Image (cartoon, rainbow, N blue to C red; front, top):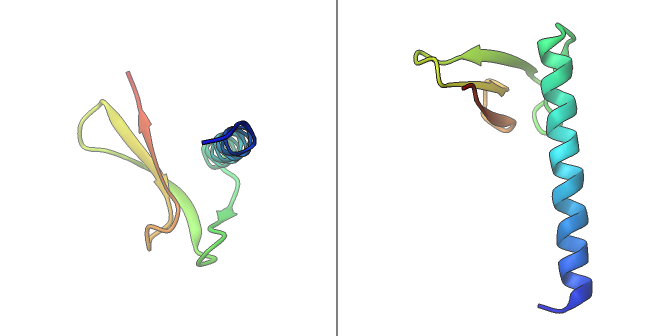
Length: 69
């Protein structure tokens, strides 16, 4: 892997992380966010155990697992 490929990967990872962080903040603030793929609402779903929760759409296109410790 050359340096330019590594830099591109790093930029894409950074963008993805920031996009996910933005979605989580908006959903937890009560705003209606739609999935970019299926246009269904993205919601917060607390898990049965107290260690994790999810933010995602009904189809699973957007699926962000949160570690709550």
